[in-house]
Amino acid sequence: MVVAGITGVELVSHGVLPGKQSLDQFDGACSVTTSLEFSDPGPSRSGTFYSTARKRPVGYTIAYPPGHGPGSVLPLVVMLHGFGANHATALAGMTPAQAVALKVDGNSLAPMAMVTVDGGGGYWNPHPGDDPVAMVMDELIPMCQALGLGRAPQHVGLMGISMGGYGALLLAEMHPHLISAVAAISPAIWTSYSEAHGANPGAFSSAAAFSANNVIDHAGALVATPTRVASGDDDPFHPGVEAFGRAAPPRVVVEFSGGCHTDPFFTSQEPLSVSFLADHLTG
Image (cartoon, rainbow, N blue to C red):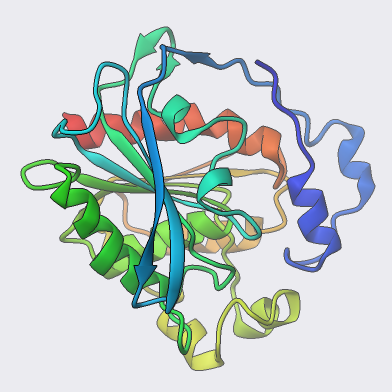
């Protein structure tokens, strides 16, 4: 399956990404071709619950790996969506059920479940009247644990793309004793509040909120958490990801490769990210 898209270009044109990528990115710098292989996917379950933390109903999808279903006791991956997406569109080029049915180098993943959820457009950090962090940690994960997913001794991991990649790093920094591994694809990391506010005024509620939720400043919290970060060489968030890499402890792996802040790059990194989580959540 060859997956293509221009999500990143659309976000740039709407001022969500820092700076302005010109259309000359299509000269080949953003060309990424991915071949995906899946086992027969397991079942999925979608629904809604009322989030007290977000003060609204939120949608979610729970996906089971091949050969498993409701009642299975499994590790759990919480997948956080990017800006403008939701629980149904959290991944690029695949569904949650396909993500946990991926074959990497011809090998099936160790079994684990995945959950996606509506986090809004507030960059997965607390805002007045809307706290997606509390929603994930105090509502979503306990709901899944009640179903046997991510309940000790099983592990909980985080994954995210763009805004969700930033969110995955943030939640792992906030809760290192609960989160066993994290994989962030093209995380949307700004280096200053003025940069973030200029690109997306709704990303942080204030300069103080940016400081409190700055994943660069708090990267040391990941000292014991296996972490993989992947970003394209031509991603406009490259300076922020580089700064995060310099601040992060040695256990954090930051990988740069050809690509931009677009769906083809996101899709190309999903198998490696899910495989990384499987190694650390199921080993």
